[in-house]
Image (cartoon, rainbow, N blue to C red; front, side, top):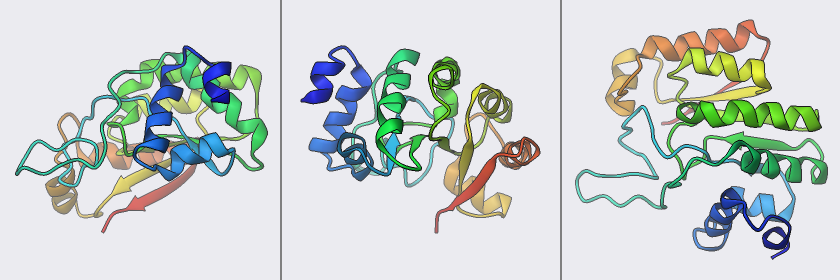
Length: 196
């Protein structure tokens, strides 16, 4: 209710309300309870077609466990979430790339200016991105805009196994490796979300 009063027009916060109250999303709850890591979902599309996608299923009568975000937030909406969270939480983190969205690199046109807005006002907190890392040039630009760390989702380091699960639409396994190399060359923190 406090966030509704303070940010009546922020659609991203309304989306997070739904995630917290209807889906019981722990990350969305973190934002409203002022703890740990806050989510910043931004992307309504994805450049992969993962077999186990939890926000979009169109095959074999499978149901996604939650609705995917249906809009790309404005940079100010994104910045308001991070800037609300950072002062409240020691060692705070805000992360793009949540279960209720596609891959955040596909929304880099909104994330880039949002990162710049955040970093104009605060150097607190870690801004992270969970991604399939299939767009290395976009990731590089986001690092330059203020992104601090990246967590790359992989199910295998064998290209054939990776491709069989992720089913990339507009990238290749080599793009993932290139993204990891770019993050390393820029001195960014890298982790692997190793799905198995």
